[in-house]
Length: 201
Ligand code: FES
Ligand code: FES
Figure 1 (spheres, rainbow, N blue to C red):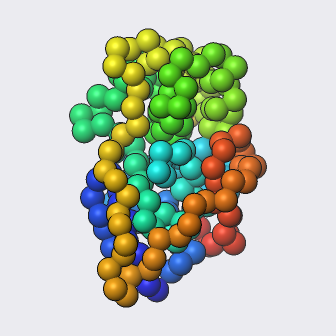
Figure 2 (tube, helix red, strand yellow):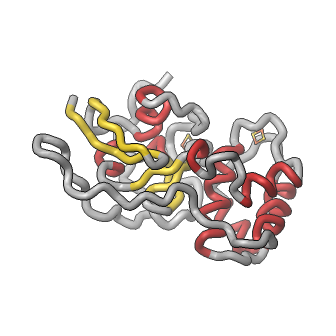
């Protein structure tokens, strides 16, 4: 166990966990942020998607060491009042069915729109391909992304704090930039190495 400092939704936390602890477990179990969901645990479904320095990443395969020193935004921090344009569009288009995949879908959509404010259907399909919905809400997701793109004011990423500076003495240092690799479950551009799978229940 070791202390790691992370910034989540604008608040800095110190968590004492093993270095290969997935960010997902830190968010859910250490910080009580259960809006980010666990499903496959293998970067195959997108249910656990959060933003790490603005990029959509799979928190189930992102070890805490990769999140240290970076800005983490979860569904809870996307907007203070659930008023992010993507969230408004999701409500307007009545996207959710069972809802389990939806926080991951929204985080991926928000990252897409922050980078590409007026995406084509092909852009949406490519960016969202790694987010699986077993209720089959894909058409409504696509409509909601177009809906959000038409909203005035654009679609910023959530949060907004700058990354923490140097860690205090004795604290784990920030890692360098993530290595670009490919997700097995989708085409997102920024991923971290997949740690050995733990005994996740
Ligand atoms: S739970 Fe992380 S991608 Fe499925
Ligand atoms: S809304 Fe049920 S899995 Fe997507």
